[in-house]
Length: 288
Length: 310
Image (cartoon, rainbow over all chains, first blue to last red; front, side, top):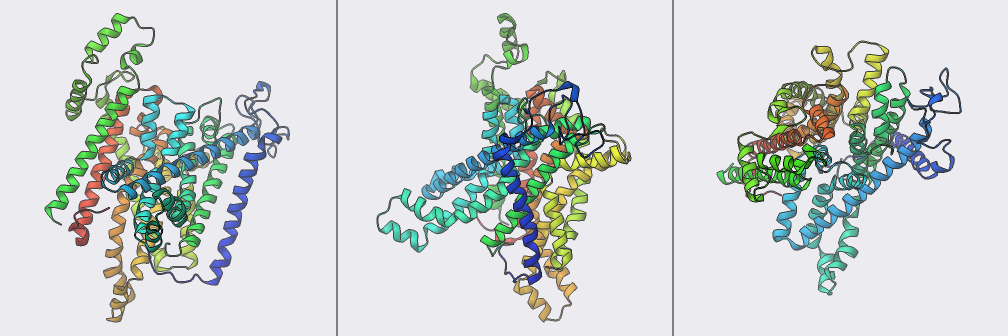
């Protein structure tokens, strides 16, 4: 985080920014709605094969029909139904991954700040180690060595980004321990558990939440990238990355197979990035 | 920059490399019996025993570890059962293609990202600043494979201008480089902008103006050199994202480099090749970070004299 003096943005920008924010919020709300309510209205089973209706174009193109609004894939499976399931799985994996990472990282960071000494050294070495190798490479190596399973994959998504939570919580906890309120509560005889959960954690929560909004879209990007490579979520399950990966072979004849999920990924990560920027500006006026 | 600082950084890098090599060894042994893996579950016991003998798998684990270290130092990382030759040989063959892709992308990223960031910072809050930042947010929210798919749809399928896969001519290089440069340049533009903005608000900029320097002189002599220091830290991150982005991009465009080899080796569970590539990447990251630390200490004397820096 860089600190700098901030001049108040001119009125025009304050009016212009929220439009993009509204669009982002609208898109994310739509995704959430689709993920939650999808099972109630999807027209087909997402694994349902219909070989007589292969590679049908979306309804708005010539040859398409409203039976399959987004068309069908190479096995005649309904693209809309697959898209809904993919959104559910991709969002769920990113959500679980972000929560695991936040818990793990914050816990390790607080432990390091509390015990100092060799615990701190160990956590710092682990942070440096984690930061020194691109996580995607590490994830690929783990998948190669242990072969892929859903539980392992979700755990991997959880480990992704833990070091940033750890760094943030450690740094902030170290500085707040010395501040008046923590010293006061400790003098009153509060247990360390109480000091951290009731006093320090609420004070550093802002920075952790900002990091979660940054981490969530990155987890989506990592999951979809690995699934795209065929090394993430495995068939018969489906994810947005999977759909793009399989659609790649049909770019010449059925461009919608890859483009529709690709657009969904892009809009979702973009909405999160815009929102994350905005939230960070609101919560932390000193960083830009 | 004192000797202690350099020694400390060197020791830490060496330790990290050792840690990486050890992790690879541990993970390799945890992941199952290589003999069963190579020969299959229904291989007969005599064949498995012979295989273990041949590769030293029935010696004590610490001997295997030492042997592994000795081999690693000599660059011998075993045999690729899938490529049917030395794993190192298979990896080295792909290296030039990856370096070409990364080199071109790296140069383009710096040429686009840094000037864009500087320009945006100098015109802070103008429409061009906002536009640059919007493009930059879009650029780094766009996963490599999504952008690549759209590029293929446009340039290969619709306009039929560029080949969608393979390597050989300069046309093959255009789309992979473009795919990777967009995200990288977006990050650089953003980071350069905030580094510049921070510097432009420093008191010494006011002093420079007050002593009579023109605005562009003050920017060139005082702002740019100071903004360059934080940019150096970005280089490590840059190498990391180049590597990760390269894996996806090479696979998408069937570019015959290390990234594509890594993905196919993971899919085939060709562990010898996977471990070399992982170690190669890890070592180059460690080396990059070492260089950054040393450069940082050299450029910013305040850092170089500190004993520890968290």
